Length: 230
Picture 1 (cartoon, rainbow, N blue to C red):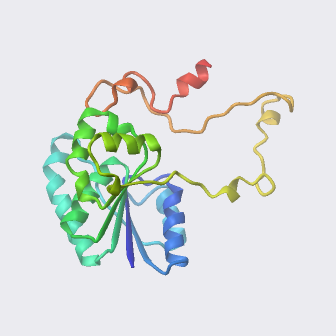
Picture 2 (cartoon, rainbow, N blue to C red; picture 1 turned 90 degrees about the horizontal axis):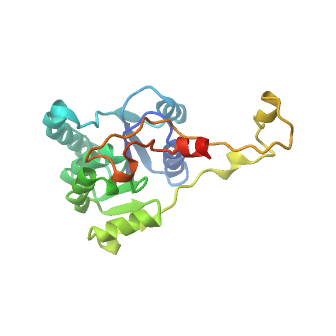
């Protein structure tokens, strides 16, 4: 069994290494990844695990991106066909679209799309692109019930939908094995001081466009401003 994971990032996404390592070590599958560059924490983790990966350009915004898109899709389909992958799983919107088209052209037997959240399904242009290409996937894997409901509203059959919540290795959060950061001492606060934290990427406020859900216009995607205001 040959499994390929396609994602448009080079940082974060630790679960990719965990999943591919498990498929390789526990199931004996051959695993490969396609990511958007060769530098970053994700690339480093794949190297450390000995998981082979390729770099690919997934962007298709702007005139150049749109003009070169068909050639990049065809080139990726040729790679999929040459490698004879049994499963191709895509993640994040741009890599999902390009990987979806390429896997369908290459006639990969099982084509999966992991949907990280409902963002693109509430943005007019992105929703339209997904709606007219999602039939190429064997299964769309929603990461929350709301995302699955949005696909149902688009007319996607239940037999093409799955629900798998995001999961993390709980052992890395075991307080008996992890040295605490001890932020209270670092900032001179007493041990009983209430402490609220948020761990998330910073994004600039979103502009009005067909690529942004209307409720995010002028807001940050992760909502840091609400935590600060509260």
